[in-house]
Image (tube, rainbow, N blue to C red; front, side):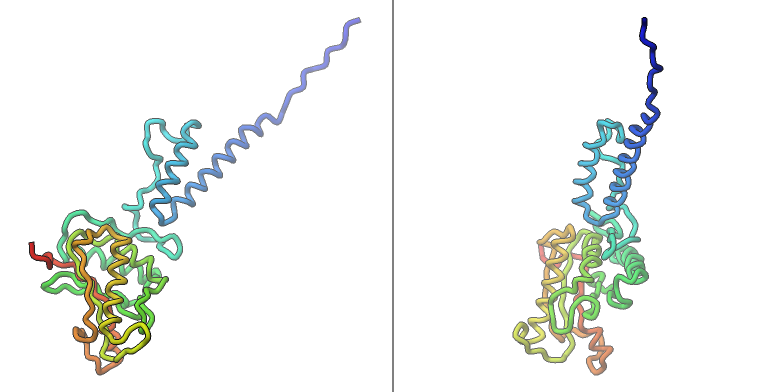
Length: 253
């Protein structure tokens, strides 16, 4: 007597395999989006290369593409800057540009930073002189009183500023008001102004693409005021570090 054949069992849950693959790819996609919003370009490049090598076998990226289609930070607009996801403002230029053109670029950038609450209104001012464009960093926004240590909250904006400065010679000058200082660290305003100038110069070298021979730093204490030291407002304007984008090299060839 032959055995009765039972109907073959049909697996109705095979769709879960495809669904699991889809969820995995979707999760990876959002990881890429999150990572691409970060400001560290070097980490982005490494992440992009890792994601490409991981997903190329799955056909997520085109096989002939050397890099996945992630946004280049050098062309990103200034919108989500740090402390929360700070992105570079304007691409730095490898060619010389006029002080007037630089002022126009930076005016828009600074307006966006003030609007976003990343810097205080009036903490960075600019003016054009026969020497070139002067970018003044006023003490209140960048240094504690009597200190040459850059405020941590202002470093992201200064880093963005350094990255967008045009090629060419520049000089960093430290200035103070005429109120004497005598601390364990600074005997006079000469030491304070020089220390602040070199602190900004060091940051520009570390965060920008400045050729070191094109950079100089100096401290002038209270002897190059831009306003009267007779009033508090005038003294506030005099306590500053000037970044001067020179029209011509200060070093004779």
